[in-house]
Amino acid sequence: MMKGIVNGGSTADRRRSDRVSGESAPLRYALALLLWACGGGEVGGPRPELPGVASVEVIPGATLIVGEGGEADFRAVARTGTGMAVSGSLRWSVEDPEIATIVSEGAATAVVRGVAPGVTRIAAAVDGVRGEARLEVFVPEEVARYEPGRSYFGRNGYVEYIPGDMGIVLSAPHGGALLPAEIPDRAGGTHVTDTNTRELALAMRDALLELTGRTPHVIISHLVRAKLDPNREIVEAAEGNPYAEQAWREFQAWIETARTTVAEDFASGLYLDIHGHGHAIDRLELGYLLGRDDLNLTDTALDRAEVVSRTSIRTLAERSSLAFSQLLRGEMSLGGLLEAEDVASVPSPADPSPGDAPYFRGGYNTREHGSLAAGETVSGIQIEHHYRGVRDTDRNRRDYAARAARALRRFMLEHYGEHNAGIGGRSPP
Image (cartoon, rainbow, N blue to C red; front, top):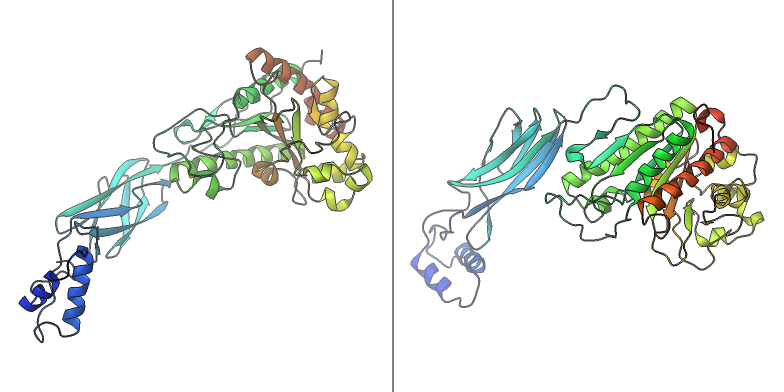
């Protein structure tokens, strides 16, 4: 018997309730209870009868437990046919106890623990009415040692990690194409896909392999940006969807795995977040977490320690023999070396600042995985690529990738040393 659902109610009470015209059922019940409590019915008479349970909702309706022994919380709400919530003691059950088990439960809550990989259903029932929720237990592959060149995939192939063997890490967060129904489109944020940036990152990998005999680490999100934005913190990136949250965690974790490997193998390295922009000027935009106002400064003002402390290449700047302004836009800056390969970039010697034009300074990934924090040994740069002549065709992507590979090799030689730059592979053309 549900708590609060009792038999009885005086005739006088029912008449009073019937005279309340145009009111919703829940309000009529509330008025009846108020009259009963105030003595409007027979003294000591029973409470008015409430309707029975029509539905039970289990919340969340679908969720994910990651790893054997992981846990998830559920709650249930019983409702009448008019949608009014009523209290009561629910009975919880798991469809397949070999996948998950209930470890604790209350009148309307339950804690469920994952036992083994698979999909099952969690149910809550009262008075013969039952509600269910989908539960998946996902156990990631345990990798003792990542093998360079092999692709590793997260849950449902939403995220891919290709380990490398040089001191460069590439990520492509916004070039995916997968549209799984289990992840709804995000209500907020930007949904525009950075077209062909996934292919561009892979072309850059191939070009570095051809040039040096070694490969960078590559992390790719295969989800369209409307489903997940891995270049945002998790709340905005996934909007609470458990499957999108898992993909976000995989993407971020594999960047950290790659950075850790680079730090262990080479002591320091470079992280590049690969994007595409639609601005009017056809040039690469190199983001160091510094805005237009910063880059529009003179070299002397740009060289101040206060500015250096706010950049994603802070550690590189502190260790470099070059002035910071020269590291950003001098001949041996990444922009300068790209310019030498006939790839227009800002900042660079020919284009030292964006002026009043739109410019992307770098986002979440550059901030989290660069060397903004003191002591981080892997510095980071966001590269925004224009479309025409760079991302638009396979031929142009490969031509750009070859130029970028030569610029990156020279940058690594200049600022990180021969070992990190992949010396020992093929000679540059």
